[in-house]
Image (cartoon, rainbow, N blue to C red):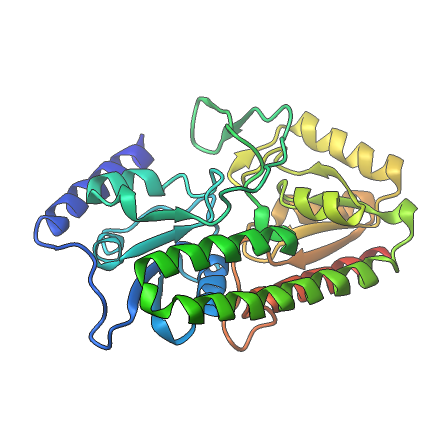
Length: 312
């Protein structure tokens, strides 16, 4: 109930703020005012938009998109934006009420539109602090874990920017083509790296079901997850954790991969119980410029290198 009251309070404040705000307008230097939800979406938008867009990022670096709660100041960012880019595929569950309160649903562009979502069977779990089961509808929202999906993002972003700013459509298209070439090179590099991992070692166990697209594209099996869910906010039972440990032992799993920005206590306990490595990765957020994953390309290279080193 506390979460619901917090959200209602935020939405009430948003309504008050937006009553004094006009629709999004270009910045003083004529750039498109664009809002992106996650740091990963924001980075790809910047690659395509180049010098002609001003990108505001909704979620701070290191924020888990599954558990993010909107803040009153997010209302102003939505009001100022001409386009709101989101991952979509059900990732940003917080976003729809914000857009509706802002009367800005027509600003939304879901960059994962057109990607065939992978199903996740049997997801049924309890969120911490809640008494009701949560059922994820749709499919796996972690589309960015395969750079071939991000090629679809690039097309969607370029189309939306060109429609909003046709005077610079040629530049957006050129930027999109250049970045697409980098994504294809990344895909080739990933294939070369994962070839170093023996087939019998290609099992991925992680804190939540983040590796579906990566596993599907590059020949891994997403064997199990700590939460048993797409979300980091689910609470596994003792029986579920014991069953996961049995799987780790039965399949000779070499590592448990955990998000660098999530609570690692359960993952650490499972790694200790089973005698395997605990390997931190980046899942839903980039790092700052001094970190190892300040861009999407570096994010993927860091994660793939860590996976290969742990499993080879």
